[in-house]
Image (cartoon, helix red, strand yellow):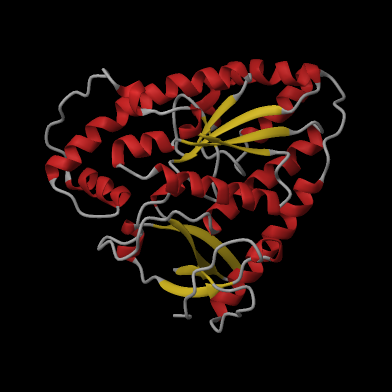
Length: 336
């Protein structure tokens, strides 16, 4: 498994894997720039037929990893929301619950810090959004507005993650989208910018939590970026679901007002899924995207505390694709 480290734009990887990954990223960037550059067109055709064509794309394996049977009960509401926009010839509205404005550590010994930079993981997410735009253009030229939702208020409340750092992450994400030409199609919804979340939790009961297993304890630690006692882990774990429930009440109103559709990175009986990078069926906030080489293919995969413990992780220097090289952060690192 190879873990990309972004080098300066002028750098070239001396590791063959780094060079191959850099070429893969450049190919993704060319596709994304071309897809986002395409202006919206006029709607045409039968409304019902168009709605079904959009649903087929959203439920296709390229973007959705849940079986059609598992999400069949969601389709009527999705159909209704889409029909509102198709009837007006307006962009459909998608809301992806992405992360809290940061990434968990990728090392069980906490030797890697929490991730507050928008990097390759975010770039490949934008690449997936570009692929969706490309597919939609063939059946519905008005396209979409893809809202990337950051629940950084929950992250601050549950894990004391500094809002200033997660808001800076949001600005980096927006800058990356703009460099790819996605400003028209992609919007970032930052929870903290909608108001202080902590007062909304005042008076919300937090039921005491009993013992938690080692896996749950470790999950708390990797999102804190440090070890913690079992008592602290229980306290933070107990806060998470109530905080998410309160945030969902606010977010649900925003989505409903837009006749939008909520997407998640994980399988859910209540929402459609969307792959945050090619082939993914997991939540990218739990780590950072790495790669393996499979024949002539470069295959993205998530580097987490769990995968890093089971496989050799080789850091390799890679270059930002040209549209991003001048504006995005670098992490200088020699090849492994």
